[in-house]
Image (cartoon, rainbow, N blue to C red; front, side, top):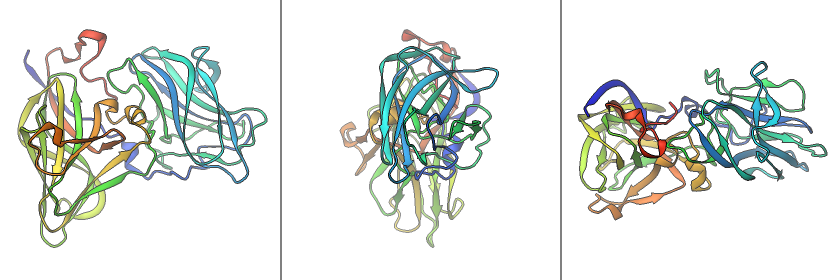
Length: 367
């Protein structure tokens, strides 16, 4: 089948919300202060998935206090837009005790299947007798990201819920899916850090699994550039499935735009290339001795948290090589990171979304 041109999209797609300041100390706009209070995420399944574990990050807990919470997947009222307290499934809840800031995960008694199109909520509710004074959850922006849906809710003291539209540090352990069917949630455990490219022979990037045949025309980066006196060039290479052969390259210069503010960079390959299905390596390298370019990356406490991220989920994982790779084993994989480096797709094979064996689509990722 032939490749058909399409309006370009980024794979994996970096949600706009991560481009704003995260609050890992917890947000007063996303907290629980009394029994019956709750914090919630409301979204919709873009494909059928199964989940058995909820992840979340607590930014801070008031001194001398703790939270005993019911963590649940609940139905959502189509008239109010609020969680109904009714569970999606009788097994879709579990209790957990929170005493300090940090990462938490709670497992349901049995896996829960959520059908495509279902509007659902992840709800963390303080049970009676709990003393959760100022239990604040980590978020990725105190600003409105411009999303009307999905959204977050803050009902700190069991009063009137407030739509916060924050990006919560919440995630689901998923199975039975080809992509990541929840948008807007980032189960990260640290503020995005960066890898700096000074005079280095190392290559940093992602191992990316592509599920269908596509044409890629370039790379997209989230990072910053600083001239340092003389223009510096970094090279971004797309390696074949053997991890050695270069299929395409793009140049990134430190005078683009020559400031230390993080930006998204869209860099074209010399010639578009058709790839997939398969697993490829996309990595950046700089051997210049002046200037500086950096690329941000996300860190997760466990690989299963990474697999629940909206940045490609389980199909995007951080990789690096300390020298020019001449063997696939030269690549070291870090299952707890994702580099903010992806591909620009501008063509797909006829029928690429048709879904072959197992019902998976070629690109089921939320954009």
